[in-house]
Structures are given as C-alpha cells and as structure tokens.
Image (tube, rainbow, N blue to C red; front, side, top):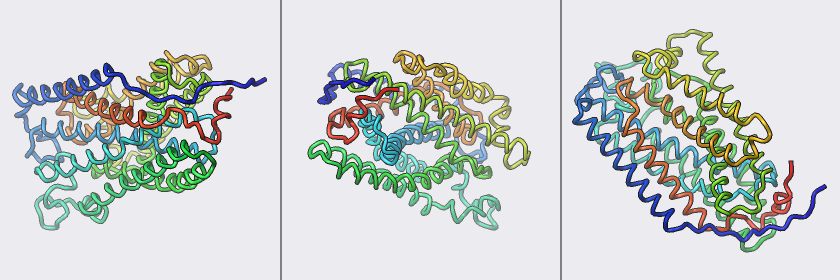
Length: 432
C-alpha cells in the first residue's frame, strides 16, 4: 500500500567555490596535458613521421597533425552527442506521458545546454581544418581533385557520392542539424521554466507536441549526422546500420550521464524527491540499451562478415587485425566494457538500487563509449600511426570539464525539481 510522501521540491543547485575552482584546475590540466602531448609529438621523434600509409593525407601531412585533428573531432562529436541525447530523453518522456521521470527531468534538460557550444566547436574544427589546408587529414573526400575526372587524384567511387559529399551541402546540413536541435531545446527549456512560474497544463502540452515533432526530426538527422561526421571518414566504406549504431552508442552514454549526475546530486543532499525506484528505472534503461548497443554492433558485424564483400569487410579488418594489430585489444575491450561489464553488474535488482554500483557502471560506460568513438574515428584517420597518450587524455579531460561546466551552470538557472509539473506527485510516489 502506498503512503503519502512529503518531500521538499524547492531545491536550487548552488555551486561551491571549491567545485568551481576544481573545474578550472581540471580544464587547465587538460589543456596542459594536450599541449605537452603535442610538443612531445612534434619534438620527441614522432612529429616528423610522414603518414605515408594514410589514404587521407597522401603523404602530405605529419602524423601528429592528423592525430590532433582526429582527437579533437572525436571528443567534439562524442560530447555533443551526449548533450543531444539529454534533449532526446526529455522529449521521449513527454511523448510517453511518463510521470516517474519528472523529478529528474532538469538533469537531461540541462545537458541540452551544451548543444550550441558543442555544435559551434564542431563547425569551427571543420572550418579550421579545411581552411588551414588539413582537410584531407580527416576527410579523404575533400582531397583536391578527387571528384574531378582527369585529375591524378580522381576516385570514381567517391565522385559517385559528390551529390551528397560536397562542401556547401555538408556544411549546410551540419549547421541545420545543430540549429534544429538547439531551437527545440530552447523552446522545451522555455516552456519548462514558464511552467514553474505559472503552473497549469498548457506548457506541458506544448512541450508534448513539440517533442513528438522533434523525435521525428531526430530520427532523420541523427543517422545523417553519423554518416556525415563519422562514416564519411572511411569514404569508400558504408553500412546501412551505422546511423543506428552511433545513435545506440550516444544514447546509452547519455543515459549513463543522466544517472551519474543524479547520483552525485543525491550524494550531495539534492534531489530529495528522487528515491531508489527512480535509480532502479535508470539502471534498467542502461542495462537494456547496453544490450541494444551490442545487438546493433553484432548485427552489423555479422551481416558484413557473412556477405564477405571487400568494400565492407575492410572496416572490421582494419580494427581487428589491421595496422599490425594496433586496435585489436581496444576492439575486444570495447565489447567487454560496453556489454559484458554492465550486463553482469546491473543484472540484479539490488545492483540497480545501489548508488555506489551505479556510479561505477555509469563511469565505465561513459569511458567505454569514448573508446567506441575512438575506434570509429582513429583507424580511418591516423591509420595506426598514433597512440593513446597525453594528447588523447588532455583532450578528453578538457572537453569533459567544459561539458560539466556548461551543464552545471545550466542546472543552477532553475529549480532542480519542476514543482508545477503535472505528474510530479506521481513521480514522488513512484514505487516499483
């Protein structure tokens, strides 16, 4: 039998000066590690190696420059995708008329604040990469003359994709995707804040209608973004499942990020309206979509393996045994940390209701899918010429810290619990 539960919903996140100082230190450390890594790559014997094996550079670019652009691109795509999944989570809850999640709604809502920041970074990286003359280090299809008949660099396969892979259309799509995502996030956020002030159901229904439209938009733009930003790196290769594979990786990472933020807030005395039943549901989401990610991974692998077509198998050959086995360990580690570990760790009911266990699993999933994106991008760019080192660590820390700064700042701009949400009482009484 359920009993009436009285909890305070008047919570406002306040960031301590110590927390802000630690974030600033983390950002400085990340930038310093990146800088030291770059200097070491330039003067430590690796910076003068020419990436002759790289199809994208055609022997014109030093391997450390290719590595720098690739790792910046990887982290920008990874963290921006996580923020977009925060918005997607909120919209799914509206469309499903879900009540349980209203107590934690402000967390994924705040994650969406990174969309314009991450989007701007991605556009800047792409334009800087292009106008500095390094564009073919990331995207082989941008190489001079590659789509022009008669050119010594002409590639008929890539030329056949010219209608899609051309600079104006590519850049236009990129800006349009971020523009649409940011527009929907800003409206959802505005409705949510206005609901806090006026109450009623009007803003809830407006959010629901907009969410239904956005889910359709997101279902179209997400796979297209995956084709553009990641799959086009391996320009000859293609997979009809790749868009959903990238979505699955982003999605389970987004869920883990939501859960991890909730755990930290709960441990620091916030989110009093949130109980172990809510964490249990988040744990079930992570458990289920870790399996879903694995299903997509295996389905894509099995179809390509069974068909045994050279233009398809090259993707997995490069990652399983290519470049003298450079990525072999990471491939199997990826499967372990993103499937086997969360599957075994979250299998029981009790595990999903323990904050310490959820913290370990969420951190593991976030790190694991960072490596998943590393495997998607690095073999097609650096071709095994780079290692995991200070550059990668510094970039990950810098982007991660920037993400935390933006999200926590957004969390301070509104009450942590949407007090006038129509389903809030249902959420407070949530019991499974």
